[in-house]
Amino acid sequence: MQKLLLIAIAGGLGSLSRYSLAGAVQRLFGASFPAGTFVVNITGCFLFGLVWGFLEDRLTLGPAARMIALTGFMGAFTTFSTFIFESVALLNSSQWLFAALNITGQIVLGILLLAAGLYLGKLV
Image 1 (cartoon, one colour):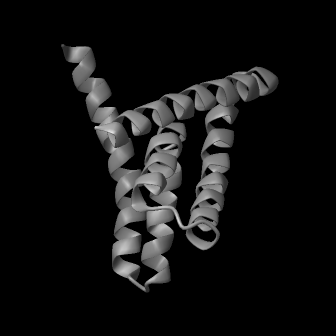
Image 2 (cartoon, helix red, strand yellow; image 1 turned 90 degrees about the horizontal axis):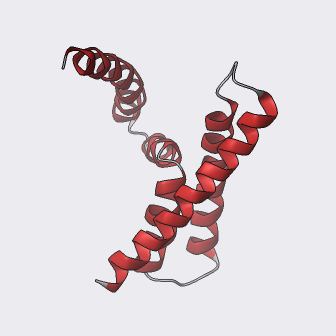
């Protein structure tokens, strides 16, 4: 129960960080391009790798601490970083088919299903 509470707190902090950073960037660049989301997603990828590498190589924290940092904070900050991390893990383990399926599947199906949900949502 304590682990879930810590993940929820870290998730709240990640969400607030995402909101703050995306808003600041979007105000700076204007509304013509989703610069806020773009910056959050690429920053999230860098931070995910940085946190993972730091926790993996320098600190001997248990799986719970990794879960709090990566699933809690980073998961709320951006799920894009998790998508990229898992895709890179598949590529690093030479699972080319699964990597291609993961990358193209999530992007193509994500676009198609968002459009389908939008269409159905307007019907209701």
